[in-house]
Amino acid sequence: FCKDIREVAEPGALLLNYSNPNAMATWACNTYGKVRTIGLCHGEIHGEHQIAEALGIPHGELDFVCAGLNHQTWYISVKHRGQEMCGKLLEGFENHPVLREQEKVRIDILRRFGYYSTESNGHLSEYVAWYRKRPDEIKDWISLDSWIHGETGGYLRVTREERNWFETEYPKILAMPPKKYDGSQRGREHCSYIQEGLETRRPYRGHFNVVNNGCITNLPDDCIVEVPCYVDGNGISVPQVGDLPGGCAAVCSQSVWVQRLAVEAAVFGDVSRLKQAALLDPLTGAVCNPPEVWQMVDEMLIAQEAWLPQYGQAIADAKQTFAKGNLIPTNSGYRGAARRQDKTAAEVAAEHDKRSITADA
Image 1 (cartoon, one colour):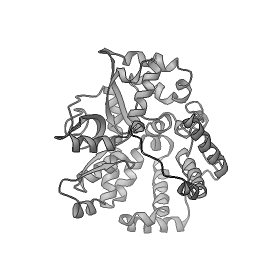
Image 2: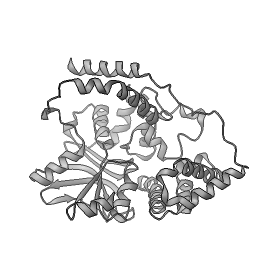
Image 3: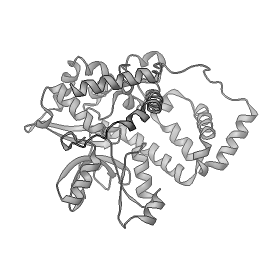
Image 4: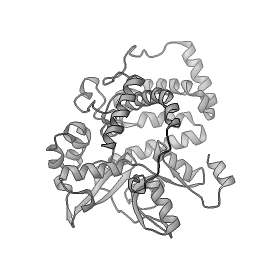
């Protein structure tokens, strides 16, 4: 993809990346793809509105500074009319009747590290070692009222459901009159605001994923950090954040090395670095021992062979290993501690209709 950009785009073209794993993809594009790349994610925006709700303060009256890694970014400053509010967040979230049930992992991280995380409850629980390692405890940390709050395989379930609904409903959508664009309903995704700022010189501030280059001083310079940035006709400016709080930096540092090894593995087709990245992943290491990690990576390589040509020899070796048998037995039939049944296309259609009626009311 970066090769195509280098060949056909204007020199200095900017790639705005929404793809996950965001930090890894952005790192690979900048360092090895030689394409200037900014990673974008909406988790920080959603968290801002949660904080406003927990504090009972209008969102527009709050000033936020977030810093860290994508999916492990921290609200290190939340100010209301110049007053720092971070010390009031725990009480606000613990007393909120909905958020205290939906965001148990995030609230516990806030309780123990002193800062609220940008990432959704379920997603955050995947990046640390403490909340998903024992099936009997997962229910204590998640909410099943939405796929994003910790459900096992939630992304996959919703994707399947929406695909089935789409195949049924899309012909009907095509037959409808086209919708008119109304600028008053413009979304908050960063992409269009960045384009607008660069082209019209209208300033825009957001939190983007960029090469660190000394912005966060206690994380490596070459890693990808999510930090405040400013956009205008002069380009994208990244002010220095300084040190992250020690505990926050320690959590992020674990993931930096996983990301580094995984990026190098993908670029160079190095299966040793790939397996080391998996072994060093905090949650994987909390659940699996080293032989289990090695076997799991081999199994995943075989399953995804069509998309991983750089691991050709490693996949051939893995197939030989599996053909010989003597594998570590898996928990046959186990589907995860917190799965929900897929909805039918009709059920998903009914939900879409309900949302449409609510929006029109």
